[in-house]
Amino acid sequence: MSRYITRLRMRRTYKWNGRPVGEDRKLKRKYYESMSISVEGKTEDATVSSGQYILIEGDDDDNPFVAQLHKLYTDDSGKKKTAVVQWFVRMCEVPQNKRKLLGRDPHPQEIFFYQDRSCDNEVDGETILGAVQTAPATPRTPRHATPSIPSRSAPARKPGNVLEEARARLHVSSVPESLPCREQEFQDIYNFVESKVIDGTGGCMYISGVPGTGKTATVHEVVRSLQQSAEQDEIPHFHFIEINGMKMTDPHQAYVQILQKLTDQKATPDHAAALLEKRFSAPAPKKETTVLLVDELDLLWTRKQNVMYNLFDWPTRRNARLVVLTIANTMDLPERIMINRVASRLGLTRMSFQPYTFKQLQQIITSRLNRVKAFEEDALQLVSRKVAALSGDARRCLDICRRATEICEHSGSQKNGSGLVGMSHVMEALDEMFSSSYIAAIRCASVQEQLFLRAVIAEFRRLGLEEATFQQVFVQHQALCRVEGLQPVSVSEGLAVCQRLGSCRLLLLEGSRLDLFLRIRLNVSQDDVLYALKAD
Image 1 (spheres, helix red, strand yellow):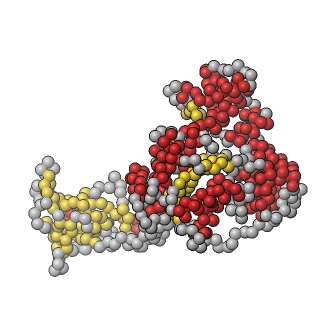
Image 2 (cartoon, rainbow, N blue to C red; image 1 turned 120 degrees about the vertical axis):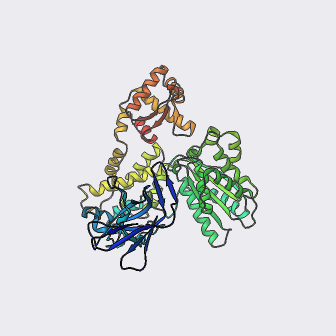
Image 3 (cartoon, rainbow, N blue to C red; image 1 turned 135 degrees about the vertical axis):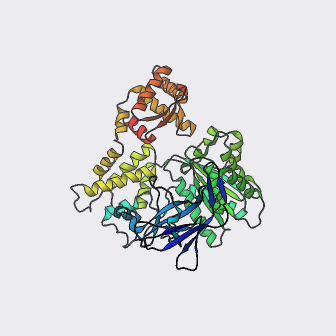
């Protein structure tokens, strides 16, 4: 039995409790679970055991070191007692420059985990003063906190003049009061979904059209109108969910998103597919109809096309009560990339959104402005005709008009920002929109390079995808050469043209072991390419 005298001349006696719980013959050690500490003048002994927090004698008698006891062992002689610990530091031991990193005011008795390889974690067991009680600090942030946006301290600033109000109304995110020029498409989609919800049956509709023609906006407006009818008990209630192929890293994530939005349940893609299969196959008398909107359908394409097949096959089940509305940019996508068994499940219910004409674009802008006089009539007609001749994209038209209002507001002739947007402002906005360095590079490209870009766009439209191989584009390029009365180039010459466009960053090229299978994507929008080629 050994004895130890502290600086306060308080005699302590240390002894093991019980028999060894383990032995290491190689290191000649015997391990114990706990140890008793007898203090002179006290009737009860203190006990320290593995896992407890302990106090260890240090330089400052008022602030002994804090540690967590991991192991207790002795050598063969049984005289030397050793403890293996994990060190902690008090707040007073933390440097001032490190305390700021906490971002809060800690408690004076708070301790922190300390890890330093230079610090020995084996100490003399007879320097242990006793056990100490610890309590976990209460976290300032809840474990499952939901981030939130702070509320406004003041209401949003109202438009200061006519141009600011027009700019807010012309923003793409601004929800218009109505959708002009799409009344017939709205009615057809509304009748299709309404009949399925009332009858409790399923079905598919394929909606196609070039970007910016109001496909998604029209479907959203249809769903809003149907939800209002359901709230007034005019039709049965239904459940609406939406997925977008652009927001998925893998097509099979569609199963996960659909299941989560239907049941708030998370699962792997394979498990989610099995659960959805069971849900849409099992009969349930009180099951509500589910309306599923699948935007950017072409991005859900896989080699086996099982994702598309399931999305189109589930509505045909007798007890599914599933209505699927699919949206893509290519009218004949089913015939181009879908195998027969998938295309047959899609059915013949299709809706095609034609590009807006200049009169329709002018009507859209006028309806958004809603009696806000900010544009001259000639200026509106000019931007509508320009965009209609290029693509008929309403979003591009709105962007140009918004930029024209900014130019008008900051021009020197309109100091108070109260003038109308004229032809000069629209022309300047058009030049900015279609005068990027990429368009200048296209205009300065050689005839074969311009033909190659036209071939890329033609192949993209044929496939319904935004990617193609060099071999596919090269076939289109040769056909265009014959149409233009030019001598078709060889494969090596065509590859050199492709590489030059890639070095200018007009194309994005993904290498392959064989040059024929080089993957090609456009690094500029198709509208910009067509505008540059038409202007040229």
